Each structure stands twice: as C-alpha cells, then as structure tokens.
Image (cartoon, rainbow, N blue to C red; front, top):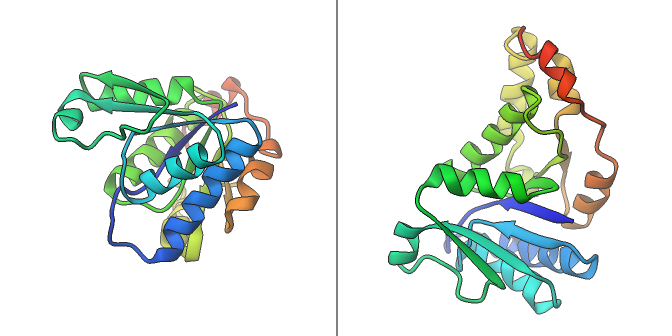
Amino acid sequence: MNIAVYCASSNQLPAAYYEAARQLGQYFARAGHTLIYGDGGIGLMGALADGVLGAGGEVVGVIPRFMVEQGWNNPRSTRTIVTETMHERKHIIADMADAMVALPGGIGTFEELLECLTWKQLGLHTKPVVILNLNGYYDHLLACLDRMVDEHFLRPVHRERMFCVVDRPEQVLPAIADAPAWSQDIRREAAI
C-alpha cells in the first residue's frame, strides 16, 4: 500500500513528535508499505522518512522544483518526483496514495488535510484518512468540525465517517484497515 503523510517540516518541535514520526515510518516499512510525502528532509517529514528508510522501506517524495532549488528536498528518498507547482504536487501525492495520514503540522499540513477531506466529501476519492492526534494537537480542529455539525455547516455522516482519529503511531495502520467504507455516491449527500 502507498500511504500519503502530511506533516511538519519544522525543526523546532518537542522531541516526542519526532520520535512518533520515526516510529510511524518504521511501522509502515515493517508492514511493507511505501511512504508518499512532500520530500522534506527535515522536521517531522525527515524523521518519518528516516524511520521508513531505517527499517528498509521505500520513500517516494513529491516536491516542486522551486523547493528543490532551495535545497529543501530529501536526498535520501528512494525516488523523487519533481513537479512544477504545489497543486501538481498535491494531486500526484493524492493520486498515488491508497490512504492518507495527517501528523501535526502547520498551515500547509492543515491545507492538505482539509483538501483531501473536501475531495472525499465530494466523492472524488474514497480512500481512508487518518488523523494522528499526537498530544491532542488536533483537538481544536476536531472541536471546530463538531461545531460545523452543530450549526449545520457539515453533515454528521461526514464528521463521523470521513476520517478516523488516533492518538498513537501504532494505531494508524489498524485505523486504515478498519476505516468505514466510503462510496462516490456520497456526493449526493455533500450539500447541507
């Protein structure tokens, strides 16, 4: 399975986040899965890729040319796909993925997570989406989604079945395996 992961590139995070990212990468590799990600060599992105590679797995990085020119790519990736735009990068990652996972991250991570949820809500993909809520990082986003349901901006079925939330790296693969079935026909339910 190809698993897309969205996460931070920051090198200024608490150590527990890096360790969790490394562990997740190790779990992927030991289970025979390939990491598809944004090809960052530092932060949680780098720790995740190092975990995969250190356990003998494969890492496919997808990165825009301007980021390569800045030296932001990961030279340790098994394979690197260079794109011309951020939009092309996100499209390729989503197309290659059999499942999507969000670790803690900044604005870019939130944007990627919310975009893949939007696409799923519209029936553009039916892939499992897992939020790894390390240290309660996503609690406020989850509360916002609950408010969307309460105030009728989001259907309960979307909040309940579009994604899974777990707290520890070892829960990610079981959550992917147990993700609720999703059909493209759900687009009939997209409008509130």
